[in-house]
Image (cartoon, rainbow, N blue to C red):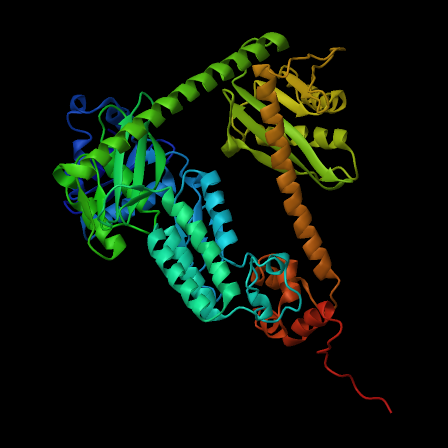
Length: 620
């Protein structure tokens, strides 16, 4: 404990709030909440021997602390969840890869809502369902709903009833064509209500609605509409048939159980909707040691990112001590109605809890076996690279470089990194080639190596440590260009190889013959994975720059539109030339930073058959 911490401990208030613990670099390494900050924070520094090894490690790294006062412990819990999301502290228990979980989003804030897959929730007024852990399953659900319900998929909202030609989806009956004014707003909203019922797991209620509407259409002799409703009903009934009935009572609740492993914890959530098992999701948590509480941090992190919270949540053990009732009160506040967190004592729900736990154990064992196998294969690959390339030791950090362009335009380079055989996207870097003109991959590769290993970059902590192996995407020409720069920089000792695309042969400096490994070689597969990542990362950046250039070039040709006007249009219409082309004159005039004259010039440029130009002086 340093003097700064000791002084702060003396001034801690006996009030609810959140505390943040920081390391020597000022990075937040732990976030916690307390009913009494004074007693909770002081407890970390008292009787260290009674704490777990994880807590002792945390305390050894604390160099500073801060706190934020709140009015209640529930408010402190909400703030704690937000700060954990923001800082991702090393010593907090957290969901693994939480950013990758997909959601289904209904844009209910729009006149004709869309259904789409997104990767995060935002406060935009839309309705979100998820998070889901299987992107494949979500895509299947999305595909089914778009087959059954003619939902629009286009993102433009500016042309309701103004388009003259329908899209392909409208031609084949997959869209109600609101852009052409063919969609009835009330009927479209009713369809959205039915999609919402499906995503809420209320397939039986939806089936009853569809059956009633089908009979009404048949009685009114609207046989085409009745046939369409029949097809929708059959699709919904097939989904409902796959769901296991767990209770004759049409109750709605979640059941949560978990299994502890040697490295992580697997948590399973089963969703019971109207008495049926609608589905399940599995999550892995890291940062856990010993018998540390898992349920409390999971409940808080999981339900902070979902929109639908059921009235009942069943867990294997209750909260105790200071935490008792806090999570339940917080969930009730999120839902806007009472939420009960219960432990099943007997009957169907206790049996279901045991089944959820068994599923969690089976998935955890499978995951650990797969990780062990993958770890063995990665280790074999690194050892093979050490052997065939004559390295002093197995490469810890590998960097791979690739160049991307089209005929020498918008040339970019990528740098991707793997550590101990695992790719590290947080260490990726990208470069825009500045000193090379035209189609010259060799010179472009030389430039990116020069910039990566310049004195400024070597002193920049964002570029991390020196690599143990540099991989160049290309043959002997690209390799020689990179090696020439490394030698000039005095870094010739860094092992460097080229991986040619055609046969995946490995080229080494000053070696006439390439190293040829079999296609099942674990070492070659590690290099291929790294090379493919570098290629993907470079192409993504190139496409981004090319899209911006094409868009800006199209706007450059419009007379009377200056740089500020172009920037305003790009911001207003989501960097989409199509949206700008389809915008009405009124929408262009309402764009901040665009004059009426400039708006008319833009509109007339894309609509030459109409003219909104101000008439010039008449001639006699």
